[in-house]
Image (cartoon, rainbow, N blue to C red; front, side, top):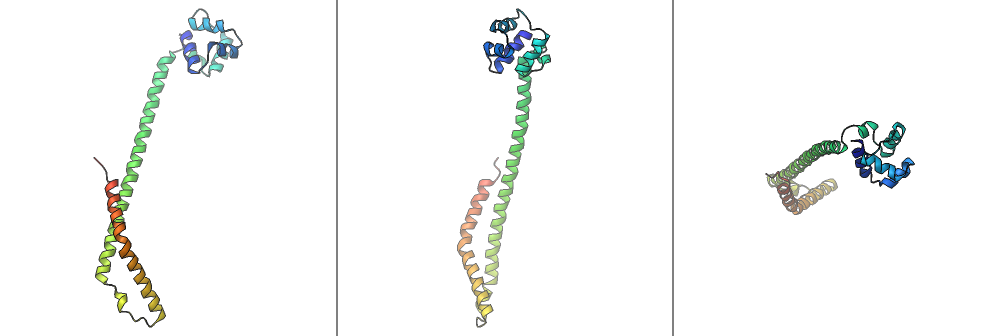
Length: 169
């Protein structure tokens, strides 16, 4: 088991036998013998080996590394699945918020048109001989003129936006 773990961890770190040997100040044949199970490192060398490979001694001596990596992959994939679910829920919440913003904007535009129809431009009957009245009337007329010209485009945009952001399925 030690021989398999040394080989598996060395390869996972992208090290050749020669590179590992240089780091441990031994010859390449020593690494080869360890990996073939023909010899084992002494206690001091085992500690050095664990430091160079960045792996606890218990892992080198214990369980099969390949099995542990499969378990690690399973844990990682489960965590990624949870993160993806959270991201999807966040996206759905933002989409719902934007959808209702479009609907609200459309309702405000329709209410604005209804108010203009009901009030029928009351400022047109004002006495414009007073400068304040003339300025206020011109401002009201400008706002109404701009609203009447721009609102149909904005309403069309809100309908399209509401349709594009509605929940599918």
